[in-house]
Image (cartoon, rainbow, N blue to C red; front, side):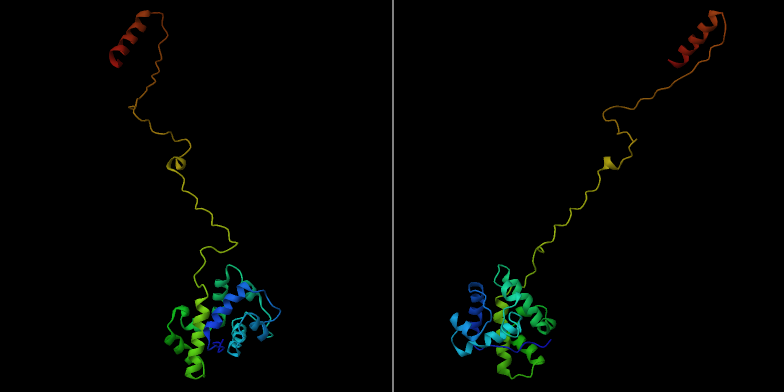
Length: 206
């Protein structure tokens, strides 16, 4: 898309008109008479209409577009930035931060895309600078309507990762061992046999 060649010599009027959009009502069409109503009575202010058409704020018949209406909101500066990125796409293609460039650098980009003379190129560059000054090119911190991302699920604790049948270690206690000994006694009626067996166990195990 070619760089818009719409420009105005009195850039101060353009800046004031952008402010007037927010305070004035939305007309059926933006015409010379409407400009006069807002106090822009000079014929030198008429290029404002052409500029508004170039950035998509007005249609070919001068009727305010949705962007024109949205510019009147609190988010108007971002709306204008989006409009400028579209209208001056070649400018931002040459430099993604075109809104920060000096006048001379802007003139260089415009001259490479236009057959206009030096005076016209400078007016085009100055017109862009005024528009860009009223715009907000910063990225929004949050996208409206987008839900906040879910918090990252916390990693399970060490105790949760442990097997369910794994017992926690004993603290403050020394380990103990238990033995179960089975003794099969012989069948006898002689009590001395049992006494001898228990005596042997006592002497060897205790």
